Amino acid sequence: MARVIFYEKPGCRNNTKQKTLLTAAGHEVVSFNLLTQPWTIERLRSFFGDLPVTEWFNKAAPRVKSGEVMPEKMDPQTALLLMVRDPLLIRRPLIEIGDRREVGFEVDKIDAWIGLTPTDESLQEISENLKSQDLQGCPRNHEHSHEKGACKH
Image (tube, rainbow, N blue to C red; front, side):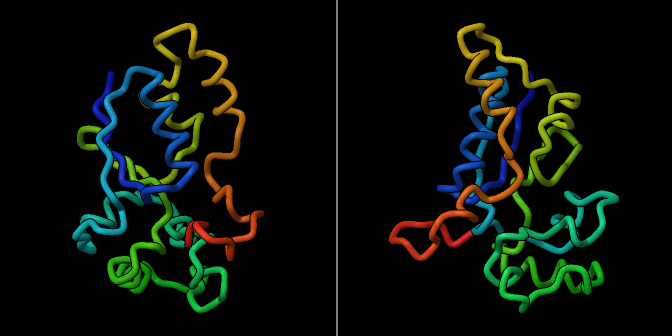
């Protein structure tokens, strides 16, 4: 089983579900607050690989949703500089296992990489239920984000 370094936004429902899948599969998850990490441009860039700049961004971030930040018009250096200054713009989670780093939680990709089969048969149904959900988007996008206690994406 893998030791998964997991950079998340505390309180994010999907990050919680993602960690549940990982731990059910027997992986050790070590969580860090993505928003308070001392990011450098070089370190942050290492999570994005060959992905286009638009896929580096948290599409639910208020500055993206409002149109203030337009990922489709960003060059890599500008995008990274903005993300270092405002980590809420970073797509989550950032995952690190050994020397490999990834952004986002694509179930099939993670399953092929480290496996997401539960180690305990009693967790199989829960795991399958979670795998069938959209774990990429913000589950609060369709809720009233102005309600007290709602995440600020």
